[in-house]
Amino acid sequence: DGLVNATIRAQVNGYLIKQNYKEGDMVKKNQVLFEIDARVFQAAFEQARSQLAQQQARWNTAKANLSRIKPLAAQNAVSKRDLDNAIGAEETAHALVLEAQAALDKAKLDLGFTKVTSLIDGIAGIAKAQIGDLVGPGQIDELTTVSTVDPIKVYFPLSEQEYLKAMGKSSTEKQKVALELILSDGSTYPYKGEIAFADRQVDVKTGTIMVATIFPNPGNLLRPGQFGKVRAIMGIRKGALLVPQRSVAEMQGKYLVAVVKPDNTADIRPVKVAEQVGTLWVITEGLKAGEKIVVEGIQKVKPGSPVNPQPYNPEAQAKKDPAATEGKPAAPAKQEK
Image (cartoon, rainbow, N blue to C red; front, side, top):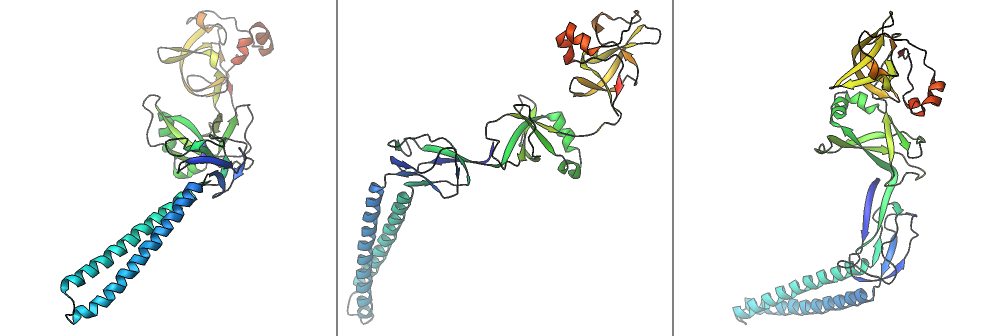
């Protein structure tokens, strides 16, 4: 999503007479994007200006009249009522001047709104109104959208468990997390991103919280609405033990592996699993490096049953069963250095 998305709307009613930008181009703040027929608003502005001039003249007359009456009232040459009337007339005339000034300011604003400008620097989208359309409140008010895309925000949902795990890290560890972006074509975006913020609440329907990240976008390759995958190294497991996913069976919430004992009999052993790495599974408990496990036909294996282990051949297995390559099974469990 854009860092800032500004919806450009028409604030006055009128006919659209000009579009001053090319759709998809970069635009600058305060650049005029559209023009609305201003003749009606120009006339209203001139009328408001004349009304202000009239009220200003009436106020000047009322002030002059009050200036003449005040000395006479001090000499009791005029009644107190005449003085009060003069004061009231001057104050009323002053209020009418302020009202006329406000009307002129409003007419000036409306006249300025006939030139629809961009509120930010960014990429302007497709116009949603055409020349000659009647636009404005109650008509077509949304004209286009301008988005700031450098940098750009990338959102992804994080499970509640992963969120709690990440928040348990120190602030220094969290600041060091560099994010990679995998685009929809499988390529890796050349610039690293960083975490900006997390949403205020967890989605009760999915059990996830939305996290916003910021990625530099100097070439404007990334656009709002694109999809990708965000990848980050959250930790390093040294000497991790990995086995093919297809060699692990799940039963009633428990994970089981068929281990081939030295006497070539099978032993069904419970294991604890951690992260999935590609087509492999990290085993944290239950196996030792170098032990042989059953990869193919684990459903048929029973505790104590004899096993005739054969070395695993990925190429032969791929020809026999192409789907087997997804698991990439291997007879011995291997330890990553």
